[in-house]
Image 1 (cartoon, rainbow, N blue to C red):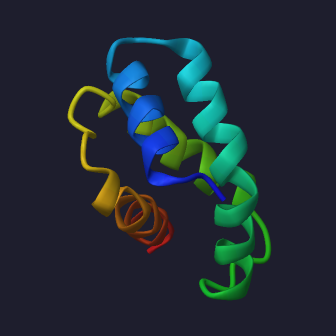
Image 2: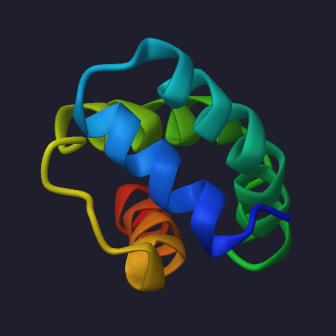
Amino acid sequence: MVNAINLEKILTDMANDDKQAFDTLYRLYYSRLYSYSQTFLKINSGVDDVLQAVFVKVGLNRKNIRKVETFNAFLYTVTKSIWS
């Protein structure tokens, strides 16, 4: 699991248009969100489409995502709202 210091750097770098930071974030969270989608949201098909939309939203909002403390909640809330 990523610690708060690393996540803060990743989010800061991503806000500064660092593609590698976005790729790192994707690698860190994709499998967790995939499991969450299948286990808790009961998505049986289309998980990849939902997660693609989630990461597009993260990319579009990258300049506004700063708070490490709320980032996980943001990701899971976005995932749930896209599926709903």
